[in-house]
Amino acid sequence: MVNVRPGEIGDLEALTTLYNHFVLETAITFDIEPFTPAQREPWFGQFEKTGPYRLLVAHLDGAHAGYATSTRHRAKPAYNPSIETTVYVDPKFARQKVGAALYEALFSALEGEDVHKAFAGVALPNEASVAFHQRFGFTEIGTFHEIGRKFGRFHDVMWFEKRL
Image (cartoon, rainbow, N blue to C red; front, side, top):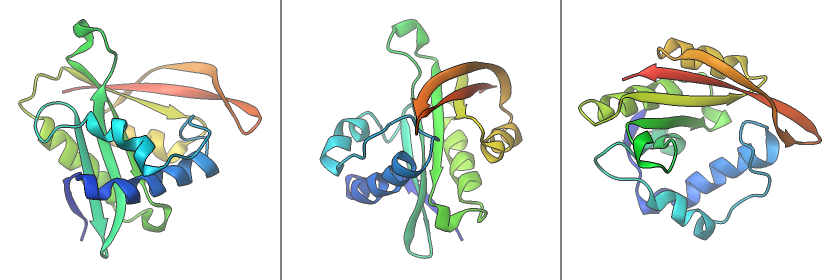
């Protein structure tokens, strides 16, 4: 069974290792160089135990299986009711409902918060992530074509929104 809880500083090393897999092996994220846990501390510092900016961590079989976040969409104050969500699942735990457990817990945690819409960007091609976001009620709002270059080629990012 997937156990989801708020992230803690003790998770940072495992979460950094997980994220670095996607940095080095995929175009899912447009970061190019791997991070150290110390470099990820500012990223970790943006999250709260309550409020709209959350980090949730999933454990399965005693291991860090993935994490989900809700972050500030843009820095300008008028954007505050908008968040960007993301989910990363360790490939070892793919198709074991880790991502679903994370998003269910994240959206449940956000109920009652001053959040109007959630946005999510999916680097293409990624049919599984597109379908995943659609299952959670996100609708496509557009595609930024050839917006990022990684591994010697340009990638599109499809954007989704969900009213909360």
